[in-house]
Length: 74
Image (cartoon, rainbow, N blue to C red; front, top):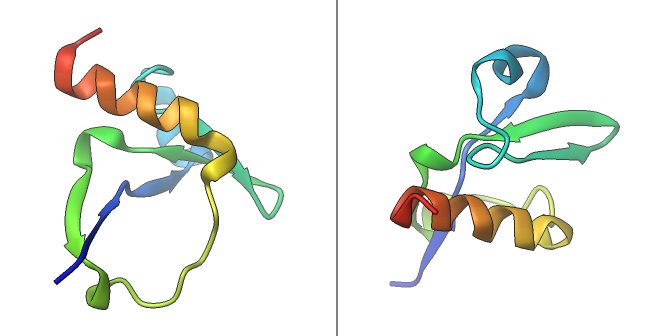
């Protein structure tokens, strides 16, 4: 069983007023801004994920920084 890590995304127009920019980085997908809800990260069996929707590798450093913030508070 291989796990992937998933960070839920929320449309920024819904979540932006209640987020911390370092903990909840934003990304633009199909011309819409989404906020990563990093505090809800989860390990999920790859078979449960379904088809890949987006490649967020362009936001890698922001995501790693947010996960580091969750784990260490730095």
